[in-house]
Length: 285
Length: 258
Image (cartoon, rainbow over all chains, first blue to last red; front, side, top):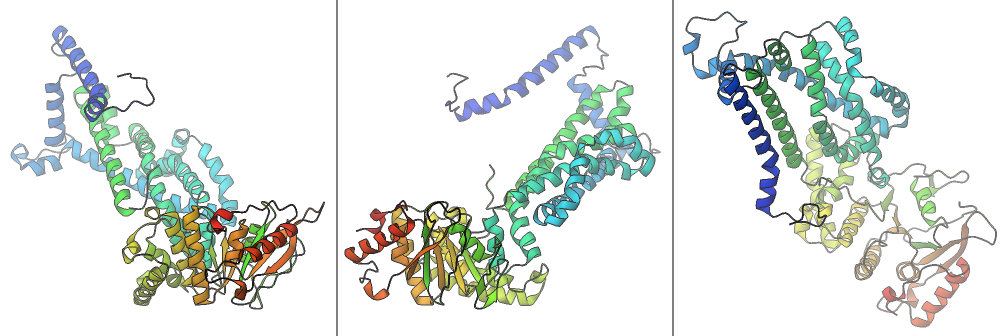
């Protein structure tokens, strides 16, 4: 077996082993380092052990948020109730709401991109502006957003809008330009009007690719959301990570980071599955 | 560039446009289709001037002839459903009634085009090139266009499929009486299909192309197979080559079979 052979065809077992090898190596390296540090200092918090992280995460997920006034007997409440009043649940809910708002706004952005590419006058009005808008570094306008919209939800959502929508608009614009002109002409010869061609011919064809583009922008959406939450927020996953950093609570920070990665992975997976189900004709390149 | 093109196509005629590569035969078709605007002159369909692509002109291109996101049945019924449709039409019961009716009609076209009923649920990428073009012809014909415009519609097909498609198109044309304008670079195909071959070419030193010859192919001269006899075939080919100057139009005698 030669590792650097272009025509190599790894068998199933080898491929499975190789694809997990870095995860295994990373985890092993972490726990070895953690063990070494704990031998020197059993109270070490910088590289927490598995038991420290499990305890930290179970406190975050099953104990009532310390900010809330603890009700009597809360410790003995049913599991769902304990999860519902936990710090992790509240943070996930707060970040999730903002994330979904940001994600939701990307869909109209894609429609704008399609109109820009299809209708020359719309393109003339918007294209130059969007190209300029795309060059603005979203984080650089964060202070302006906080002044203009306050430090509430709107400024964080606006940060996502400024950061990601131009990319999605331009993506949809390019995808629409990529629809063969024969298809548009065909639509007209079959009796469709301008808007029916736009929505029944073009949009239907670009939609799975638009969903893919939005899916690929999940990380930037989360990135802008986290930036906003870390700088000015009173709840949310990023707010919590920033807060815990002050106490060097790596036993909660690491599970939180993994939790965020898992959530993003699930959204990505869900969108990929949805795309496949909704568009059986679509073959990914 | 085309100049001084004065072409009249009678109802029910099958006109093939041939010419050397780059002579402007596809441009002529695109102007008739309304995709390109002539700098001078007019295009009339049944006496009415046309500017943009519309439902009175059916179109079958060489590539991308079907909507990839729709099944065969949905491709064929697209036209009937789009007639006067608005974006909100699917919310109205009338749309669903029309959908049922057009599906029944589409199944007849599927049969007429030699496709199997179970092909109706397939997506275009599950069909061969020849099958896709059969669906594209059905999709255009279901609209009863005043003229069917076909741009190198069979050029991407293998020789065997191409011959099958030529026979099918001739049969459909005879059955429906649809007026057809067919652009091709293949003389044998043009002679087999058409009632008249229009040759586009350039005069010596000229920049613009024009119609240099119009050669009638009378039906009575055809054999039972639809082909011309060898002698007549040779005469028509010579005439087309002479008109196109230099005779560099691609000939595919192998496909013609004689």
